[in-house]
Amino acid sequence: MKPAEERLAIFPLNVVLFPGGRLPLRIFEQRYMGMARDCLRREQPFGVCLIAAGSEVGEPALPHDVGVSARITGWDMENLGVLQVVARGERRFRIENRDTGADGLVTAKVEWLPQPLASPVPRAQQKLIPLLRAIAEDMGTERLPPPHDFDDAAWLGHRFAELLPIPLLARQKLLELDDDIARLEIIQRYLAQHGVLR
Image (tube, rainbow, N blue to C red; front, side, top):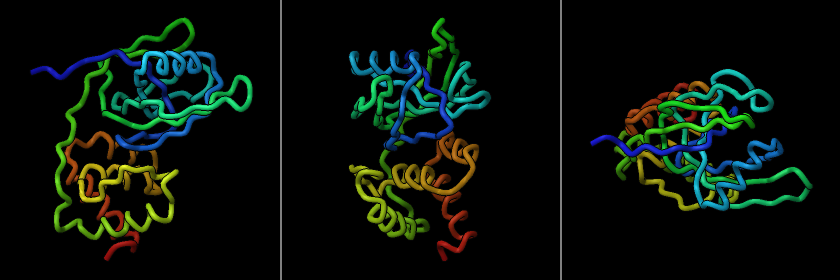
């Protein structure tokens, strides 16, 4: 059965969003103000993709093909013309084809990637759980908002992948992985190599 397809507005950013991740945004360009307004009115998500070429401001940037849908969970406009938004990552997708509107907003037909089934963290990676619990306690619920699911392999891997001090392209590769256990194994090796885990 072919996966469901949908059309999304795409927000190319110098950030890699993961499912369940928190994304604060400061929006001032008209194309993205309009996108945010439409998403709020229609209660629809937009797509977040790491920039492959170009920049966040000005001419439309070329996005990586794999990204994550994001839903606005809060917004404010303290200063006229600057929209403060908090969005939350939902589902991974792959861009099938994209178009750029007259206003510079990129929209794309996307294919939803398989949703990970809830699976326990393998015994070999159990040491990652108390480490992330300690990090979450230190960061607080505003930066790492609940619900927390430390015992789920996908959730644990996504949180580490967004927190590790690694290059954006390495983060993108972790997002693109379909195997949640393989992601945990890579993270575990990285932490062991840097002396964080024994």
